[in-house]
Image: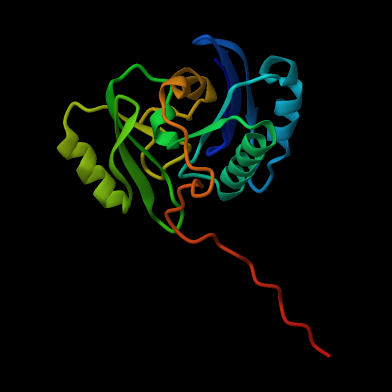
Length: 202
């Protein structure tokens, strides 16, 4: 099975292709805030590798609104255009770490973090919004469970930093059930911030 995997939930995006359980091509790229063109550039660069793929997989966040919307729209379009399966996986499950169980947090803006527990590449419960104080309490309570952060977390520089990786997704997507393309979408923890146009004066 040839799988194309997309992961754009953080400031470091990635695309990977696996074939028969091995990574055959991959790219990582920076995703400046508010931009998503790098995803399509990388997709074009890897086109010879993913051409003829049997399945497309996408990390669904939480994370960057723009990055998630772009990747999910692209994955859905490829699923419909090529008639292939679509697999959707929460991005916290895709860290390039060897721990069977871990916790991961990211900046949810507005003075809050999102916090997720992962075991064997599956979420343990829901992704939660927490205050920095609640996050520190959870770190203390979890004991020997490793914690990671995605991007910068104010006051938490001692937490190891990493990013979800499409290569991890490409390797596990073959064993996961297809998503329902009619209902799948990004994990949004808060409504997207929409800037309203200013009123005009006459």
